[in-house]
Image (cartoon, rainbow, N blue to C red; front, side, top):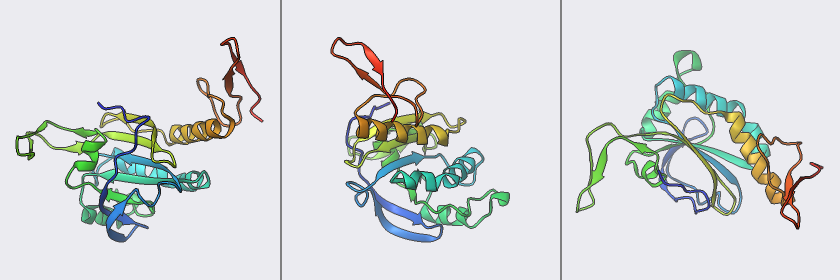
Length: 210
C-alpha cells in the first residue's frame, strides 16, 4: 500500500454526478487546487449496505466541512449512470437521495489504482493492458488534500469497516490549527484544546489553545 502523505495528490479527470442529479463528463481536482481543501473518499459499490451510511453521514456534516473551506468528493468504480440511479432512491429505499457533493465514476479503475486503494487480483501485461482474476472495487480510502494539492492525511479501511466522519473533521481541524498556529497536535487533540511546541531543549510543552 502506497503512502501518499506528503506527496502531490494524483490528478484525475472523469465523469461525475454533482448536485444530486447533474452528470458532468470532465470532473477534476484542478478547480480546487489553490482554493479549497479536499476530503476525497473512496467507497466500494453503489446499491450496497455500509456505503450509503457513509455517504449520508458525510452529507449530514457537509456544512461543517464547507465552513472549514473543505470540499467533499466521493469516488467509486461504478458508472455515472449507476450513481445517478442510486441518487434517485430515498434512504428508506436503500438509496442516497439528497447527497449533493460530487460522486465520481472511476469506471476504468485508474483513480483507485493511482491512490492505491484498488482491491482484487490484477496485473498489467507487457503491453500495459490490465488483467483481473477477481472483482475490482475500491477499499474505503480517505485522503485529506491541502490547498496546495498535497496529501496531508490518509486512512484505508477494509470493505466491511465504515469510517468516522467525526474523525475526518477532527483531522481537518488539526491541520488547520497547525497551519495557523505552527503548533503540533498531540494524541486525541480536538478543536479548542491546547497544541504543543518543542522548546529549545527539546522538551515538548503544552500551549494555550487561544
